[in-house]
Image (cartoon, rainbow, N blue to C red; front, side, top):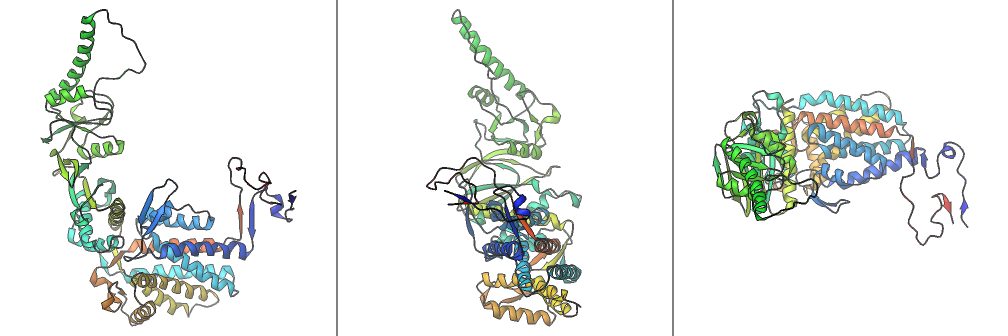
Length: 551
């Protein structure tokens, strides 16, 4: 028989059966720091341009082959509550800046790991938290002095490409110059006259398997991976009508029975339906509509009359693509087949069908319109490669939007982190009280980021880090780590164009510090029993007992 073990007195005795309760620094803090260190070890190898990819299979069976930390965190099903809080901080960084997700994870993990050493040495938690907050405040004060470049003209394609190549190259190394130029052209194309209203949604993606990365291109307009349904393949200066319903005779909502008394009634019944469809298509033709985009079922009879009146017909099943197309051409999405008013008709330069690789696409090409829309056509060998390209370009677009708010740039390749670490290490020696240990450990945590870059690049970490620290102590604050083995491991990041946005580093340091200080303040953990149906019968004879019941 199963023997019930009584709960210990205190708070656990008042909780519902099945609820887990943890208290004490060993159960709450050290065990949670261990879980965070496991998450950091998983993502550390993804940091930098030479980061390794992860093969993640989610609960739906979809496979992700990527080094993008935001994608990995989104698809992982984390159970530890502290690891979930760490993931929420990374997601906040991704939403605010579009980059620096792995930076927040690694810095917060290093802060927690260094805090564990101090706590095991007997330093109170409050002193560690105060030291981290003081170090963060000092780092944010020193950060503006490290600015090495400012984006002066966001409409200059060459300058924008030079700025964005580091962000794009951190995900797809080796093709950063080509891809960053595509991103720069697309961003400048959709940039409105007023600089503060840049909309990233105006840049679309079209992923076509086959070819190489260098075969990717930029199209001014919208590209739809569909074929033209009729015989008309190209229209110049079109007038476009977009419908989200079926193109053809309306179907009956209920089942009905039609009784014909003779053959004449049957002939007149079919002719009436044909006459109705012909009137609909003829009404569109009389309104000079020569391109029709439908989102529902396409009837063969309606297509026959569309070919007769030289109307190009495209069927788009995605409602999102319909909305993007309406935004691009200035059309109104209509609910039924009626003749649109002049304000509801869309316009563009031309609509034509072409072949990219072995895939037929329909291109709505624009030219000097008030609603500029750009589509980046991505080419690659596999779908996973296309997803990686989309992630890299998406980060570049978000950073371009961020640079519209603050165009300052910091030296990349670990130069900013090492410069802050050297200065905080010097200032930490003069802080009074035991809080200086927190400041010194904060400076050591910043060193883990360039060390991770060197480790992932296959360099000798100790030798490169020692050389890098010496050069920063001598005042060369732009010195960073290079991935080329023949260059000695260090490089001038500002001259080579390895730049990071100022706001990405600023908010990343703030979020990582706040997350570390918050997690260090946890004293008790209470986990409720998971909801769900009855347990499955198994070999255990006491399968219906509570988790605290023993055999």
